[in-house]
Every structure is written in structure tokens, then in C-alpha cells.
Figure 1: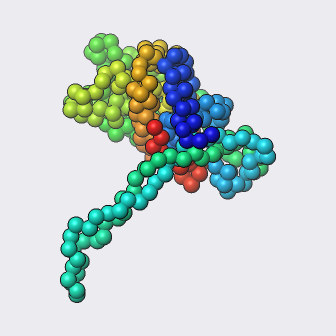
Figure 2: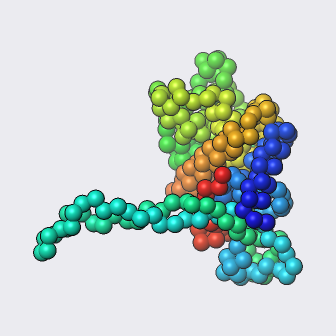
Length: 308
């Protein structure tokens, strides 16, 4: 498969998501496993090996003590071709014996194209056993405690509670003007937990009043809810019964707009995941429900983050 064929496969995946909202859920669940991958590459993995759980390149698996089995066909992804761009020197050379006013600017780098790269799922390898972290399933008691820890150690803006009637019946509200998240006090813990993730995603994407004025409300709600669904799933809480109907109405959208949404979702998942991973380091109470990234260090992560 060449780069053009890979891009065509991405477009096929986008079209399938447009025709069947369930495909959005499948893509979101796949992204929850591969949140460090670009939206396009998540679609490529989903199209070629939907059951994949952990992927890495041939040499990365070998470094982990595992060998790709003979006869296995790899999963094609797209990797950027990055080149150094020449920099222009705008200042005159310093006279002999004088001290330079400023250091030489670092060469600029730019993505000039894409190439195909190959990764393999763990099921296609054999060798040294790996400790693959898995989140624990949450119950009501866990959620009460986790909600408290999420507020105190992870969410970077103030969180308060109020009756839903004061929120116009909403489960939660992010206020760009007041820089606060308000969660409905009279909802069940699982709903409050999911809502907090949703509103936190809003606070990242709509950080101030100016951004709120420029946003497309429908797209923003879809991005926030999908981000919440993915993060909740990573922590053992399936919110599909609520989230799937919530995002289902986007299915008649334009394919390019859908791709833009997937990119925004991926960026917010990455942003919130980073914050959660940092919170886990400072708050051991959160560790049991957050899968670590030990299996996929930076060295073996996919080579691209800019696939279109």
C-alpha cells in the first residue's frame, strides 16, 4: 500500500462514519487505545486490524523482547516526511573581534509529504511477556472518590456543584467568562463524572469568551462528548448509552468537516490524557484506574502526528 492508497482508505473510514453513527463509537473506542496516534492513522488501524490493542514497529517490538512472527502482514500507517528548511540571515556579519549580538537561528523544519510506515499488533508477535496495564472497572463508590480526586488534582479550573434547575436542566456548564465548571449536584456519580470530563474538554477548546463567540456549537458539543467518552472508557466507565445518541446527529455532515472534528477530538484527548498522567504521578489514588503508557514509550510511538 502506498501513501495515496492509505489516504484513500482513511477517506473510506470517514465515509463509513458518516453513514453509520456506530462507526463513530468504534473509532472513538479505537482512539482510546491509540490516543497518541493521529486521527487518520487510527482510522487506518481500524480499517486494517480492528481488533488491534497495542501496536509498534518491528524494531520497537524487538527492543521489548518480542519478535514479529513470520508471515504476518503489517498495518500500514502514514508518517510525515520532515525536512529542514533554509533560514535567511537578515543581519550583517559582526565585525572581527566583536561579540555576536544573537545566536544563529535554528533551522526550520516543515512537513513536506507523507510516506508509508508499518507497525504490528502485539497479537502478531511472540516472545517476552509484557505487563499490559488495564484500568479497573468503576462502580458508584469508586466514582464518588475518583470524582473528588479528579477535581483536586487534575482539572485546572474551579469546579462547583449546583441543582440542575439552576443550570437550565443541563448536566453541567462550562463558563468561559467566569472560568468555572458547574456540575449538576442532583445527578448520579457516573453522570457527574462523565459530565466533568465533558465540561473539562470544553474548557480546553473554548478557553475564553472570544473563543466561545467563534465556536460552532454543534461541532463543539460533539468534540467534547466524544472526548469524554474516550477518557471515561480508558478509566473503565462505558458511557456509550448516553454518548452515542448525543453525537449521532452529526452523521449527515461533510467528510472534510468530520475529519476536522476527529483531529480536534484527538488533540483534546491528548491534552487531557497528559494532564491525567501528571495527576496520577501526584495522586496515587488515581493510579488504579488510569492505564500507564509504559508499553508504548516515545521511542516506539508512531512516527507521525500530522496525518490529514
